[in-house]
Length: 539
Ligand SMILES: Nc1ncnc2c1ncn2[C@@H]1O[C@H](COP(=O)(O)OP(=O)(O)O)[C@@H](O)[C@H]1O
Ligand SMILES: [Mg+2]
Image (cartoon, rainbow, N blue to C red; front, side):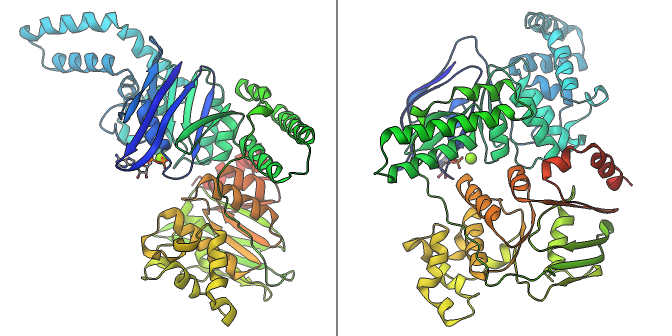
């Protein structure tokens, strides 16, 4: 379908791809993964013909069509919804808009021109195209009364569906997407996952969202060592199997038949889980074709995120009574009563992210314009990862000096001690002597995690902890929180984080709280809770 031959890409001295040969086939969905800056976006741009490689070729089978999901949600703000979809077929749209322009200023002279354009339009099956664009929109849940609304007046959540309709217009054979779930809410991501899992043609997608990758991918395409390697299976399979292969590599005493048997058993177990999954789509069924020859260890370095506790907390963790908060006249949450029990792992959720952030700021005494009260148990110690860490990184310090700010004993002030925590977050040697005010978003979060580990608290609070992190860090972080024996309050847009860590869901709404001891998926799928949620947000 789509192939790449002898592709090399270099920016200045930096080589991103070196003689890559690979192909992407019909019916498959490829999840492109790789470290930050490894060249994922660059690769997609080259596939889409938006960027020329240093050498080599991209070849799309003749008669096949490729389309790209637009990342900029506001690019078509001055166009109406239907036109935005039709732009998906550029040449058709150009003829149509030229025709519309001439009609608007109709005279004898341009009548001839209109005639010519009309003929072209008919040859391109233009009239049917319009009705099929409308049908596509309706299938994606965009009602007809919106079809002639300007994009700038459309709800942000619907825009992505319209842009998806644009990329699907004319049923492309290859669909390319770069981080499509960024900035989408839970409902829209779930909708997109289901839609793509049932889309039959080839998809090539970059994402850091493991739940998304697991729901839609038949293959994982790993960018490493300036090459791209495809593996059958979804992200969880890729991660688990490459970790298993890595462990096996160090077990020299184990016979190769034993290792092979272990891998086979792993595949059997994994495939059984996939088959049991509730929405076993055609794509998921393809994962049955996994084979052990493919399994190789990954070269990635995973950070070692380990949250120890200085002491175990008593039974009183946090008690909240009648807590309300209003921001600029908008009630974000109202009269909340909440008792957090020892060992609870609570995902705190709200449709308005300002509500959850205000909640953490209040219980960490950084926000005082609230009513009601909260009390921490005296045996608790807290550690908080705020969504905005900007204020932590204003001083001109290297990372060792930076972390030393929070040291409380002589031992903790020692460089080796501090470097231990930085090293766990993959800042070793020279890296630990970087200045803290030049760090990238992901590096700052890694520093904040070194700091949190050093605190050895028994209550962790995390406001969107996966922001800016790469897949390796997210996976390591997720696993460490699953193992943590203390109490966790957290808010995340990462579905797998929420689902795999929390045993309790608390939703903050303008009309109070919904509080359930259950898994996140169960909460989101429960019809009674859905009704309740609708009532709690509607004024
Ligand atoms: N036009 C360009 N000129 C020079 N360097 C670039 C250009 N585009 C991207 N890069 C660099 O190439 C690397 C890969 O970028 P990108 O493909 O965006 O990475 P990813 O999407 O995997 O995070 C980065 O180090 C980036 O800074
Ligand atoms: Mg990118």
